[in-house]
Image (cartoon, helix red, strand yellow):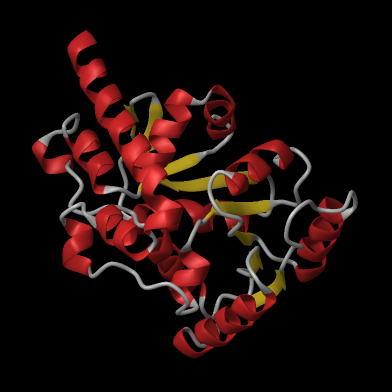
Length: 252
């Protein structure tokens, strides 16, 4: 799989089919811990501007182009016949992986993060949408500071469940730091930093309409929905992304 650096972050030039195939191959192997991220402009700009977060992202094995600006940046380095036609949107990657795993007993999912009520909604939603999919376990960590034994508790639950596809919805950048910091001690499997996908699929947060997503304006839609929480993120990090893209082009 080809990886194209976008403001320093190695983005996989892949589509959903390629990403799902990569994930399932490693999950079925049953050995090793792999980290997957669907990166948007916020993730890319934060990795470039924050050394600690950049070092955390270096521990990820597959970084997919979640945001359309990343797709455009990758396509600018690819031949015409190799160009991507769509992004690999994290919430959709989750659904595509669930669909591909339905009926395959060796593929088992674990949902980590969010509220217990959200995880219950997700189990019901996925069971109805993808008959045969195995949600082997869930865990809703406590809010705020975790107790000292929380990591051991999470690992025990993952091992007992037999899960090899672990969806970590702790919010960005907490989930990326958590996966990176514990990668050497986690049970074998593929770990996803999945952001707001839990809230989207549980019906607790509305997603942008597909045409808006394809135009690259999902950030504006979400900003209108949650202005107080997302204003700084989008204004600062979208600007940083553009700045670093222009700077890199000029220096090249």
